[in-house]
Structures are given as C-alpha cells and as structure tokens.
Image 1 (spheres, rainbow over the protein chains, first blue to last red):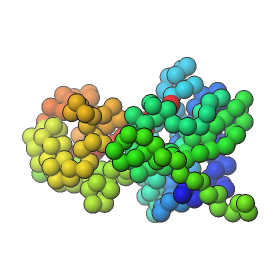
Image 2: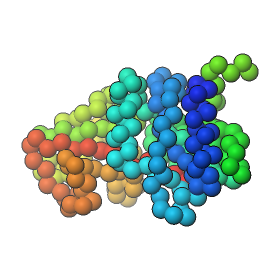
Image 3: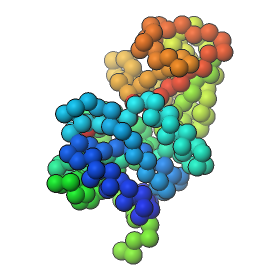
Length: 140
Length: 90
C-alpha cells in the first residue's frame, strides 16, 4: 500500500492538468511507503513526443535526490500522467522502470485529472503489480 | 580505487550503501567489480544481451561517459563515478 498526503496528491493532479495535453511527471518524496511531497519536474521530451512520453534528465534527478536529502527523506517513486489514456503502465514504462519505486499514473481526460493508480515493478522486471493508494486525511 | 555513487532505487542491492568502492582501469571494469560485489544489481543495469539498459547514465566527475569513450572511458584513483538513472516512461 502507498500512503499519500492529500496535498501531495493534489499537486500531482494539478501537474497533470497543467501539462495537458502533454504528460506531466515528477518524483514522490517520502519514507516508509508514505509520500510526503510531490516534486514536479520538466518533461524533457521534445515537441509532440511529450504527449505520450516523459523524460526526467539526470541533472534533474540529482536535484531531486538533493531536495529529498535536505528534507531528511528519500525518493520513493515517480508520478506521471496519461492524457486521455487509461492509467495502466505501458510496455515502455516497464522497460524504463526502477525497482522499489512506486509509479503513480494519473489519468487526465480533457485537462481534468480523473484518478490515480500506483504500480511497482516486480524484481525480475517482468511486470508491474498494482498497489493500493491510501489518501491520508481522507475520511473514506 | 574509485567511489561509485548508487542512486536511491538501486541501494537495496548494495546493502543500503550510497557509495561503493570499486576498482578497475575503466568504467566497464568498475561496473564488473560492482556486479561482482553486488550480483543482484546486475539485471537492473544490463539487459539480457549484456548491454547497459537505456536509462543508465554514468558520469565521471561532471562528464557523461556518452560524451567520452563510453564504457571504455578510463578512470583513475580518486575519480568519483555517479550512476544516475534517466527517469522515463510513456
């Protein structure tokens, strides 16, 4: 299960909506399966490729790791949006995925964030498993 | 000996260490030493054909080895190597 604060989830939704019709992306910062902060970063893909691909550069990766260190936390995952597409991982997502990271994918239809699902890569890299998202502070 | 910096998601394969001391005359030899010390990290760095996975970036100091001699880039004692993943998806 992935726990996430309402504020972090709101930041993910806002990033996906602002990036629409391109993909938005960034890092999940936290510890022990709890996301404390979502850190949006530029999508470094060029032009039309940003509609169905995202890339975070090594330089931005280093900045994010430093940001997490300064908060006394760690990078624990990545979020990105799927504009007008189901929020399940693509084969391309699997090829590029890191082990142990949680991958939140947010479906954004017509510039409106619909819902988010989270996935983790199996250790043999063969596929993703879905993990439940628990929104902290949500009365449901 | 050279220090190789490990990114957060791969530290589970290096007993939690962020820095691993490796030996070798070039990047290829340093990675071979890393995977000898920590064999379970290997599938996350190399594909089934033994090629570096596309998300693997290696920097010697501030220079990406893609702009140098790739995995044949020489290293010397005191160099700092950083292994940094490109984070991508679709």
